[in-house]
Length: 160
Image 1 (cartoon, rainbow, N blue to C red):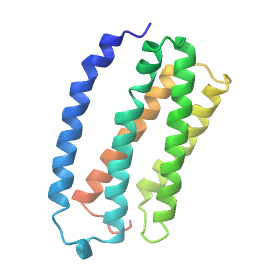
Image 2 (cartoon, rainbow, N blue to C red):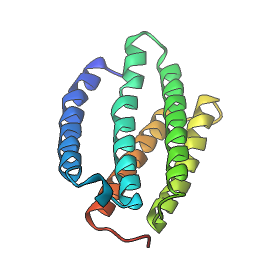
Image 3 (cartoon, helix red, strand yellow):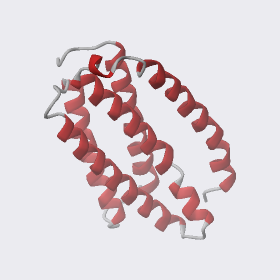
């Protein structure tokens, strides 16, 4: 059973993390807009989008359960929301990648992303069990994508 107190324990931790990320982004954002390469803009947007996805979607199962939705239904709909959000951001990344060169690591993460999107949808359709596990792995994958793009911004690879 999901306890609402667990959700309330996580909120300050996530807020502190997001505040730290905002500080990093604001420091990086002090560059002149024409000094950003297309790759850096793509990496920054990917970093922010995936971080915000984790931030907002991670609360959904708890909110649904607090709203008296059955726990299994809450996890299924949370997987659907994460899958749709992830698909939208991957689509945006692919559009941006037309103007910027992606790295091998980013392309590998795209493949894992598509795999997880499929798993999220299969959980929603009740084809796969492990709804909570797949949801958590999806969130962790998004955090890894954000972290990977943060590292790329610190140590550019110039399209390797």
